[in-house]
Image (cartoon, rainbow, N blue to C red; front, side, top):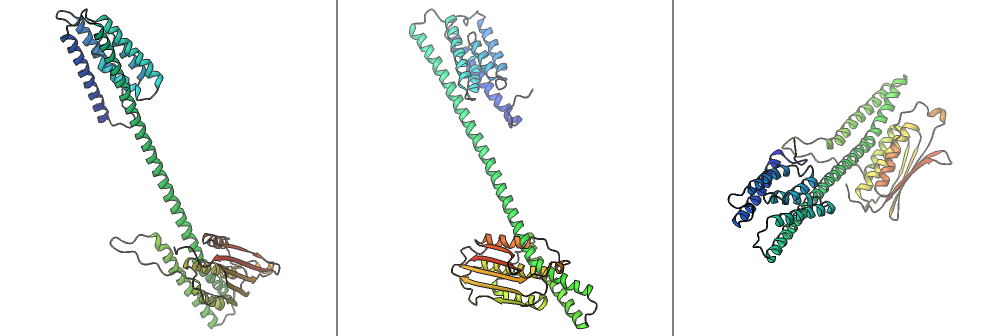
Length: 400
């Protein structure tokens, strides 16, 4: 039979029961010796009541072991035994303290009444004829003080247990919140890496797919055109692999004893003319109109604007190959206005284009929102596909 508290080790439980039993024995023995020294009736030499008192004290020690399973029943029983045995007082006091730790006043009051009644009955049967009224009052005062001490001790122990339980719950809640924050940060980082991978690779892979498709279906290409397309495929495939390694590098820990390599510089609007020039030479005409002075624009906003334009060029290659795209950037007060548009081919000519995940413009919209801007896209009345974005200038966000 295991009477230990949940979460308490066996060794700690055994020690806890042992010192409580020893304390009950010490208190009971001290009271019995006091009664015998005072020549109380039943405890004199040749009288056998002292043996019954000790026997009841031993029984109370056994009952004390079950106080956690039946706290009220054990406290009431030991309180009643105190009417016949002074040796049971130590066990009865510990049982009352254990009951009070639950901080339920009705059982405590009932047990206290039984405890006091047992003391009164014992005093009535075993009083000495020589005792005066003052001795009776002193005995009752001592009984009330002992009762108050037991109740106060039980309340203090119960309050301490509640405090420890509350601190434990708060610790578990803090750990749970910390794990939730870590998981949220992990998901956010994965989403950021996924967006970077899409922005970096979609542009390169679509270019490779377009030129490889031309090599597969066009049989009238000259040797020079074949070499030029093959070079474009090779260069963009190598560039895609290199950029992919840079993006995935943040997922790998550096070897022990080595410092992580510095991150490669991220593209900004200063690199936009080079991007447009490359797209113009491979995908079709492109017109760029942008401010020459980009001072005051944060690197975060500049980098996201670059990615939005890159996504627009990728969409032009997928859905309107060869059509001219116009890219216009304007400094308008505290905003950077970005506008891109290109004609769309007839629906019959649009079939068979490069496949798309449908997430490019979603990611571009997220980029704009994350820096405090907005992005819209769709077909206008002239039949052109238009992307409009507004980004903050000067950027108030720190470079991430």
